[in-house]
Length: 430
Image (cartoon, rainbow, N blue to C red):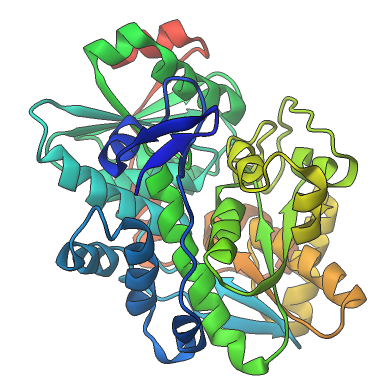
C-alpha cells in the first residue's frame, strides 16, 4: 500500500516512510492511496470471530503488501491484548468500552500498534528516533507506556499546563528514562501547532530523526478501525441499523470509523459529538469550517479548536460538504449538560460514564429519540476514575480506582516547563 498527502494527491510513499516521517513535509496528512473493500463473507462472519482475528483481516487488507502474515499476526496480537466489551446502558443504547488497556483509555490501541511498527522499522535504522506527541489528556499516557524503555527511541510529550487531569499528567510525566514531559504554556492547539512546526522545520529534521505518535500518524488510525468492526459484531444480531456516536476532539477516532465504513462495515450513521469546541458540528450544519482557540471544559481531551484529522475527513469526501453531511450529524454539549448526563445515567442505571463518554451518550440519546429503529453504540473512551474529581462530585459516590492507575497518585511528576514557540521546542529537542 502506498500513501499520499492530503495536500498532494500525486505523492506516493511507502508504509515505512509514512510511519517514520509521521507527517508530510507539505503539512498535510498521509492517507492510503486506496481503501480496500472487505468481502461480504467476512462481514457476515464477524460475530464468530475473535477480536484479534478481526484485527488481522482488517490490517491484512491494508498492509498485506508491506508485512508478512506472520508479522501481521504478531502486530495484531500485540495490539489487542485487552477486551472492548459492548454494554447496554439503555434499551438499544450501548457503550463500547475502550478503557480496559494499560492506561485505561482508547489511545492504548493506536499507541501499541504504532510502537510495534516503529520498533519494527527502527531496527533498520542506525540512529536514535525522537517521537513527538501532543496530548490533551490520554494520548500522552498511552504513547509513553507503549514506548517506555524501547531501545533507540526518545519520546517527547507536549501537554498544556493546567489542562489535563492530575492522573492523566502522571501517566506520562512520572516515567523518566526515554520519556520526557514538556509542560507547555498554552492550549492543546499550541502543543499540536508546535509538533507540526517541528516537522516542517527542514533544518531540525536534518539534525534529529523525528516521527509523530499523534493521530496525525496514519499508524495510529489503522488499529482504531478494529474496534468499530468488533463493536458492530457485538450488536449485529439485533438486525437493526447501527449508529456509532463518537465523542470527538482531534477527530482521529471518527476518521477511523469512516474508513471502516469505506472498507465495507455497514454503519448506518455517525454522530460527531463534541463539547463547546464544536468547529466540526458547525461545519456539518453550515458548510463553513472556522478554527478558533479552544475552550477549557471538563471533557478536556476534546478541547481542540482546530482538529488535524478534519483534513482526512475532507479527503474521504472529496471536499464535498453535502456528501459528508449525509453520513454524519454533529452535536454540541455544554459542561452542564455533561454533568447532568453523569448524574442521570448513574441514578437510573448505576452505570458510571466519564465526561467524554457522557457526550457520546447524549448524542446517541438525542439521535435515538428521533430515529427509533436503530441500535446506538457510543464510544466510552476513558475510565471514569481518570476524572474522579468531576465524576464523584456529580454521582455522589466514590469510584473504585484500578490499581494500575491509583499507583500514580504517590509518584512525583517529572516535567519541564517551556513556552509555546517553536524556538523553545527546537532548543529542547536538539
